[in-house]
Amino acid sequence: MIDTKQKILDTAERLIGERGYAATSLRQIISEAGVNLASIHYHFGSKEELLDEVILRKAVPVNAERLARLDRLEADAGGAAVSVDQVLEALLMPMAEVADREPRFVAVMGRMISEGLIHGIAEKHFQVVTARVFAALRRALPDLPEQEFLWRAHFMTGAMAYTMCVSPSRVLPGTPVGSYRERIERLIGFVAAGFLAPVREISQVETTK
Image (cartoon, rainbow, N blue to C red):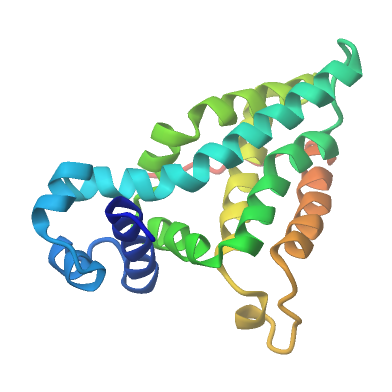
């Protein structure tokens, strides 16, 4: 039998994924979960804390797997830099594997992006992993200028969010959707090539105020 806390989390995940965070009220959640408002306050305290729990129950194991894979790669490398492809696989594959099992969670994260909440969530729940991944990528790309590295990391983050949250069939009609793992395998090749590409000279355009 599903306990009350699990029932609330399952219902909140479904409703937020379908309607968005702002459009989902606590009243709607308790109505569909078949619980009372006191249960929400007892288990979570607030709507924001409920959202945190919805994200954490999937993010915690994903982040743990990411760090474990990086640990193994770095141990195998024996002090040498881990390749860009391997770092990206450690970052992205655990996410893809969970997404294939839990597509509702992908919908929630898509809502976080569209509602402008993803930056705060990333700082709160993914900062440790982000710092570790960026450090590993930096070691793999010692000659890449810092500003260029940050731009490429920025592009990677955007491509990752778009790949996970937008079906390819919406942009390219007739394209097989495939699994999230398939999408991520393609993304790894694309992003790795971007990180390893020669640095272009950027023309400076003067702007007038």
